Length: 187
Image 1 (tube, rainbow, N blue to C red):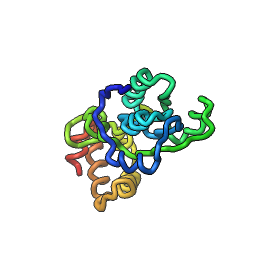
Image 2 (cartoon, rainbow, N blue to C red):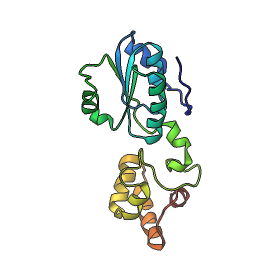
Image 3 (cartoon, rainbow, N blue to C red):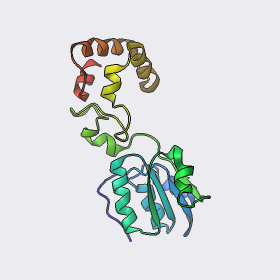
């Protein structure tokens, strides 16, 4: 049985991951970063039992549809992969035959302008995997110049981090930076 996906993302290293996992019918697998479900679907096609974790509400909705199509074989667990032991334990899972991690921002998040991960289109400056915690706008408008420079240097590997941080602080003194385009114009 195959469940259609509302999302269109094919994992780049699907063949390599499947070769490494060597899934067999009845294996219990964890897709620790469900995303659009490409790895989960491939493991289900190999007749595995699959547990999937994701914190992105869009991914969780996609997982719920897959859960309905593969009742008893697939379980969607909303949450963080760092909580996998507790999430799996709540379902009586104490051992796994394989685990997949596809770390980072997914193409579905980058392609959705409303998520604010991309500077390709003007959108609210969000950049959160889920709606929990501070948005990028919150950080950009509250962090000190030194904190901004550190973030840009550490996570963006930006050589002009100090100059950009100074421009952000000067711009936000005039009005809060709330959109991706406003931030992009400062860089």
